Image 1 (cartoon, rainbow, N blue to C red):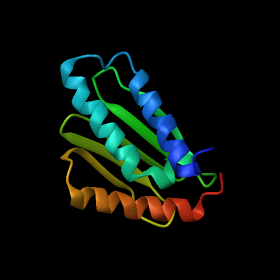
Image 2 (image 1 turned 180 degrees about the vertical axis):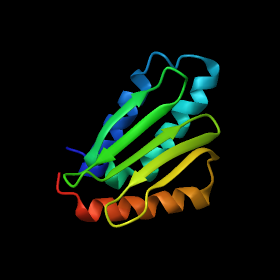
Image 3 (image 1 turned 60 degrees about the vertical axis):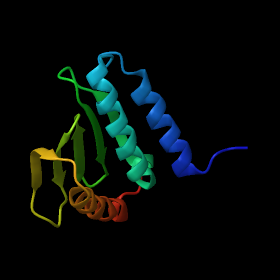
Image 4 (image 1 turned 45 degrees about the vertical axis):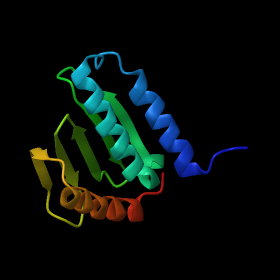
Length: 121
């Protein structure tokens, strides 16, 4: 039996995160766990994620865009995250090394809703 679309996308994202080799230290376990949490939280939007990749400095990035050149990029660390949001009908939004908190995740969800409404990938 095939998994529903969002759940299938989540499983693929977790498999990719688990495959990262640069992140094989004890500390990286927390980074991978955070990236998996983000994948779960944003599961409904993974179908139009362009890339999930590890960074040489020990973080994981997830990037989305659409045909209108709108972009959301999240870099996930052990305790912090950075982001870049460029939506055509809103000012550029960025944040660097911000503590991962529920209020920030709620804000990111609002950006994803806006991006998904214009995405047709």
